[in-house]
Image (tube, rainbow, N blue to C red; front, side, top):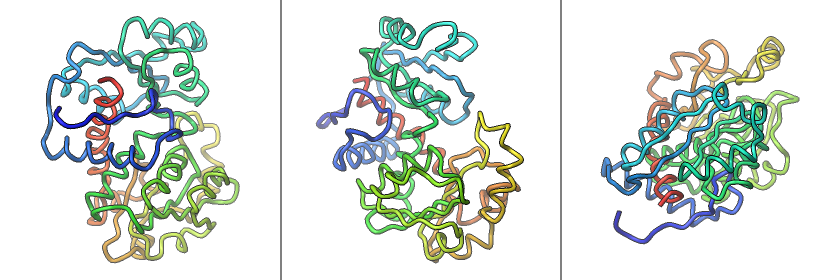
Length: 301
């Protein structure tokens, strides 16, 4: 592609080491790629390893398609094949893969696993989800908000639900672009207080208070992969935190609904909310492709 190259840190594990300018340029690149429906040979001959402990629809598909659109390839390696940390130490997996491929995208249970991959591999490592962070999702969220509202400065995004990895990444990136975040979780499910403080986020245990007048209302599943044993307790604890028509009616008149998917209808949200007029959920999902292209173009160039 023409133009000046964007330089990012070697790895994308979270947004540590990323400044405001880097995030803005990354989203601008993703926006350009989307508008141009860009396909090229920028990564011709390059291969991305998808090292996944967890199954995926959006993450796997968007990374594979992004590599194809950029002239490269992806190879999928699941936990049954690799046994990362079990059949073979993380360090050894990293030392092998750096000899075969140009980058690793790891979707793992523990953040320590992806951090160890980055520490031991000489090639770029991308966090495709860990228990601490989901930076690829946050980038798609930013692109979606920019498309709807034209920018981020002064926007109020209300998060209702679990204080999880998706929220962590949103809180990390929000102060870099001037986004304001309100957070409502049940007691016992609060996010890291340091992240709340860094983002200057407003926190409450009342979802209606968080949602009132917000430009976007964002939620995620109450029970993620690996938390199945807690399901019944979580369903009880999260009562009153469902994003439905009543909660959406409290938004700013131009307010939108966001969800990183998959959605569990009847739990954290309703089918009517996901498929209703305020929803930008599927735009958000599509933007995972365009932001993935921007990241891959930059890190694997």
